[in-house]
Image 1: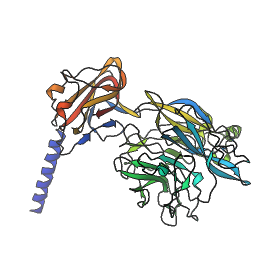
Image 2: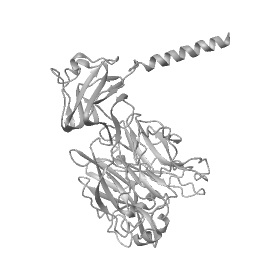
Image 3: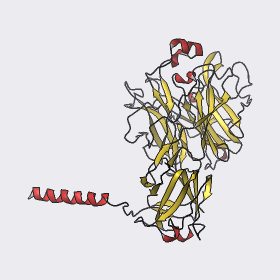
Length: 499
C-alpha cells in the first residue's frame, strides 16, 4: 500500500514537471513593478526566456593614466580609492604614505574634479606632513588606523548638514589587535570628525584590512557596510589559518545601530580571494548594487625577479597577481555572479602583472552624454603608481546581443506604473530592435504586437519606444504584462519605464 502510494505521488510529480516543461510561461501572481525604473541585463532578475541571444559582459576600455601619485606623501602604495559625486563636482579619496612626526605612516588624501576627467590635488594646509602644510592630506595618522582605508560616501538622504559626508576607516592587522571600524562625518568632505555616536568601533572581530564600503541600499531602505572578512573567522580569530579573503555585510536603519555581519554568498561559484569589493549603487538604477572586487591569485607569478627589480616593484608585491571581476546584488546576503570572467585585466603594461595591482576604485560616474567612467589603480608597489580611467557606454556593463539571425528575450511579469518606455540599444544598418507587449500567456496584445511595433534602427542611450497609433503605454497602466524584445544584429543594454 505504501509503495503504491509512493508510486502515485512520483507519477503526479513527473506529470506536473513534464506539463510545466511544455509551458513557455508560468502564470505569476506577483509582478515586478516598473515605475520610474530602469533595468539592466546584468542578471536574470527580469528575464524569463532567451532564444538565440547571448547575455554578454562588456569589458571597459582603458583610456590612459588620469592622475599620477607622485607626491612625497603618496608613495608607491597608493590604493583604496573612493570617488563620490557631490554638489561641487567629484571628490577622490585615497591612501598615501607620508613622513609624519619622524616616521613613515599612512595618510588619507583628496583630489577634486569638475568633470571626472581632469583631477587636481588641492593645497588644503590642514596637517603638516613631510615637513610642510602644502599638501592634500585630509586624515593624518591616528590611533584608529582610519587612514589605512578611509572610504567616503555622500549621503543625499542626510538631514543633518554636518553629516552629508560619511566615511568609515579602521583595521585589525593581526589576531592580537581589536581596533575595529570607525565612523566619520563631515559637512564639506574636507574637514572630518569622528561620528559623535561612535562610542565604540564596529566589527572588532573582523580583519577589515581592506577597503570596507558604506552605501545606501535603495531596495532595502537602509545603510549597508560591505566589509573584509576571512572564511572561518570567529571571535578572537579574524585571521584564521587557511582562510580565504571574502566579504561580509552589515546593515543599519540609522547609521548608529548595526546588525552582526553575515558573510556574503556568491551563487554556486567556487570561493576565490576577493580582496576588495568597490560596491556602489548604480546611479541610473539605484536598486542595483554593482560590485567590482579585485580577485587575488595568491601564488601566481609570471614576471622574473630581474623584471620586478627593473620596475622598482617593492619585494612585498613580487608574488601574486590580480584582476577585477564584476558582480551585482539587489540586496540581501548574496552577490550575483552571472559573469565569472575577468572584468578588468592587467593589459599590456607588465608593471600591472605584480601583486595587488588592477584594484578597481569605488565609484562609477557619468563623464559624457554617452559614457560612464570607472577607475583602477595601476603599477601598485612601484614608483609609477597611478590611477587609470576606464570607459563604458552608459548602462553598458553587459547586454543582450543578437547576431544576424533574429533572437528574442521575454521578461517575467511586469506591472506597468509609468507610461513612457525608453531603451538603450545599438543596431547595425542590417539590424533592428522591435519591442512587443505580451499578456501573461505569451500572446501579443494586439495594439502592441509585432504588427504594430515599429522596427527601430540606430544607436541611442534613451530612445523613446512607440507603436503604431500609440506613443506610450497609457492603455496598460496597472496591467500585468510581459515585454518581448526582438533583436537582429543588435545589442540591448537597458530599458526603462518613466512618468
